[in-house]
Figure 1 (cartoon, one colour):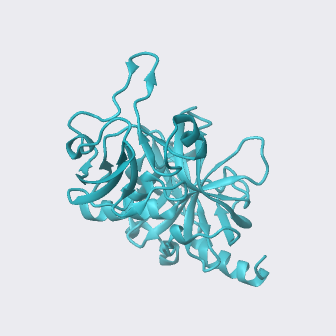
Figure 2 (cartoon, rainbow, N blue to C red):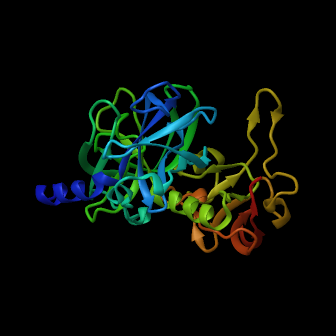
Length: 333
């Protein structure tokens, strides 16, 4: 494990940027007339001095209620939900920077590159559960990359499939959820997101590169622009290769999937970029924009880095022969 004084230094520098997020309700209170906190939702962290805050989408699931940000100083400020991405479980909140009494409370954390995360590297998870266990810090290592899990919100019971996660043995608990996962340089490489119920030392963080894309879209377009591809697929591994008799053990197999209520779903959506590019059922997509599709770098990871509206090459295998197609991704409606 890394030297203790280095961990202490990272925590001291990061703590002012970590906030609590709570549900608010208007009450008559002379000391705090606007609202009082009823339920802590979890943590978040400041990423921009204009007041932008990153957290999990499942921390702010209800748009019909108001949320309060509690800074490290104890100051409470109403926030606005700017965007939410249910597929990646990321939300961007905003507070009015002019309302912040101390500018030290607006210090932004530096964002790292989650693609450079390495197995075994030291990481620090920080959370700030309101009311109890404030400034929760845990230290561990990156114990897995590109993990895929189904996460269930304990309040809404909603299930979401999360991909490309960073697995860590640093303790992730309700206080840490939504807070930063930092590398030893003090840069954020993930957003603490989930734990495996009943298991010890198995936590997951959303890769920060997904959030960087969202922040970029928000600043440029005022919304999230997600690429639309238009295919149903199975990620190929050794088991899928064996079961389907495929010639490769990587890439994705374009294939329809059964639906008990509606029958068989179409593998390639009509009018989609995939259909316009000429993709067909049983094609194997090997590469997108010259990037090989693997378990470590899956199709969604690659698509998130592709430009919408610009032609890009995709390498496929059809009937045992490789072929290059051109596809133009569209914005998901």
